[in-house]
Image (cartoon, rainbow, N blue to C red):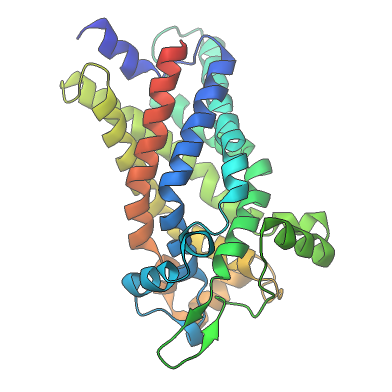
Length: 311
């Protein structure tokens, strides 16, 4: 194995020599992934927050209705704030991830590759760190995405789960949230989001590292490691998202609920299962898994290649 492949293989596993490199590469990766995945994400939120009166007939039905609203009011509704902030969110994640790995290796006096356990723990720590910024941004995004009008075959119109005012943009959504519940209202759904993000980011990074290791050792990639980044990033994202879908459904419903009908994560979980059954916790799974591969592949590819060039 030549040196170029080794560098590409270890670019995420080893902490970068300069912390700023992690932040720059993470910001670029996050923005690329967001643009690629937002239409999928909008469809997922619509499926997860739909009410029984405005229920879609399936994923294709949801896609048709969202497409009929146009790009800015449909598939890309709610993308402006994430686009401005996800660079920060992902740079925080990758920055904390890289520096946590560096700290753990220093503490253990290990100069070789980090263990998969180290990678998992670093991913969990980074997943927790990004919640401070990510939760308010995600709340605003979900509110806007859930309010895309939907007319069923019976002529009933609705904006997902709650009868709420239609916000023209993120600022209106945030101001309405703060007026109703104060600044703490911007963290509605934080518990469910933490249950979703903290373990899943650790699993996400560990699977990615394992797959890239296997692919490089078996020569299943190109000299620059691009194919390994694509396949490992896409696969790790798909597996991870599938494992935490129930928490994602609960989070989306809580964040879209402006009427305050849920008294916390457990209450939302209980009411959802009682009214719609266990399968309701897996709404949007297909489109989420379809989204996970290109988004995570693009994010990790951009991150790993940018970090390699910066290093």
